[in-house]
Length: 324
Ligand SMILES: Nc1ncnc2c1ncn2[C@@H]1O[C@H](COP(=O)(O)OP(=O)(O)O)[C@@H](O)[C@H]1O
Ligand code: SF4
Ligand SMILES: [Mg+2]
Image (cartoon, rainbow, N blue to C red; front, side, top):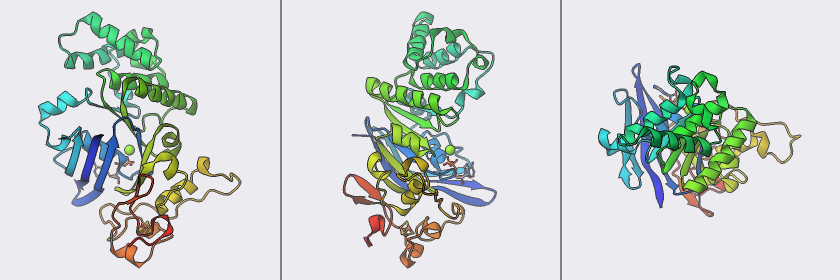
């Protein structure tokens, strides 16, 4: 069963007289216990999509349409009370460097304990302390850090505290937005391994938002590729990253060293840049940069279509054939 279903989700920022179409008609299912990577270059709309799902965007300057069904219940229609009930308990988020903004005057134990207390007001001090310590253990943090202040912790430890914080109320859905990006590769790999183990142990479903394909390759069962606010391709990670059927994914994979078999070949990068989101192309958003673009691509938008092997792609020529 899908734990989260996005149906035709669009997000438009209204700023200085312009309408920035950051997310356009995205539909996506996140199945229970199937970690999903959402990958895309900087500015492709990854954070916008997740902030919309979490209802954290400024409603005065942003229009969000469509549906975001969490276990069948539309997040976009939830009352503020219902929203605060499900935040942390059903759906939790870890941001990049989230704890840099932590108050320097509280210990990390106190900070995490407070989140628990808000949702479980009847909990005793001892219970809170033991739950926090158990959660620290899950993410390989020593109990002694309960009494430490944020400035006394390394970047890796702070990010682990951030993950502990997201796990404290046993959410079913964990969203990580570039959560390991700022860390060195060794710490990043350790944390990814821990997260995978935790998921199996606790039955958590994870959405991993990243620009780094190696993070998706090593930690996600499925992947969805985002470009200029539109989905290009999705499917099982080992298929999509090895034999991409969409020209944009093909370009991404070509430009990423880890996925090249012949490392002596020079890296290719995709020529051009993201389109202006205030003035999107009439047809396929990738057409201005696509080596396979033909007339139809500049005039019509390709729909997301199903392909064998549980794959989807939005391209008139996905996999090399004209499917119009
Ligand atoms: N508050 C905002 N107002 C106007 N445009 C914004 C705002 N926030 C983000 N954007 C624009 O939306 C696009 C997507 O940004 P973002 O979701 O942060 O992408 P990503 O996380 O993939 O790097 C970018 O072009 C960005 O400039
Ligand atoms: S629809 Fe056309 S422009 Fe878009 S990715 Fe496919 S071939 Fe390229
Ligand atoms: Mg981002």
